[in-house]
Length: 192
Image (tube, rainbow, N blue to C red):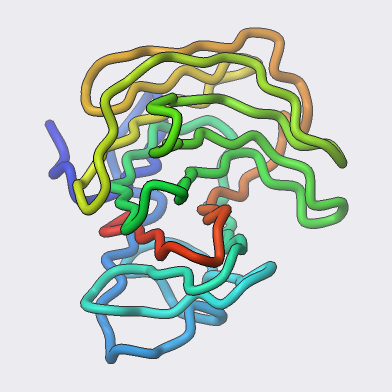
């Protein structure tokens, strides 16, 4: 069964297609994401840094920062719709976030460089994969990521696949989320 593009459906790779996590970010403008219960999922969102709020039914970062949620499984397929309001912005999907040390993998839509990149953060950013893409400001871009065992595979806008094998950092982590890397241009997640 296909899922709507504007939804993140963390789901098992084998078995029933029951969403492990879904957040449509409905709520009053200005509502903080910290402690927000997702539409579907076992745990509330946690703002790790920055200022994440709901704006026009989107998760919006007014300053650089990260939010995460524990979806209760380490292997999944997730879809997120990201948008940046300025060319200096980058909006990312985070997978395998470890709340004990803040390490994670990040799939970043970099508007200024027209690149889709996979990074590992372990105290510093290490680029693992990169693809050239056409990315525009104020345009929705759909990131689909599959996390399975030690492999992370992702596409943006249905193409430009990047894949990393041997991704063993935080392999058992069940936290996903988003990162906005700029304080001058707003990044949003439409639905996750």
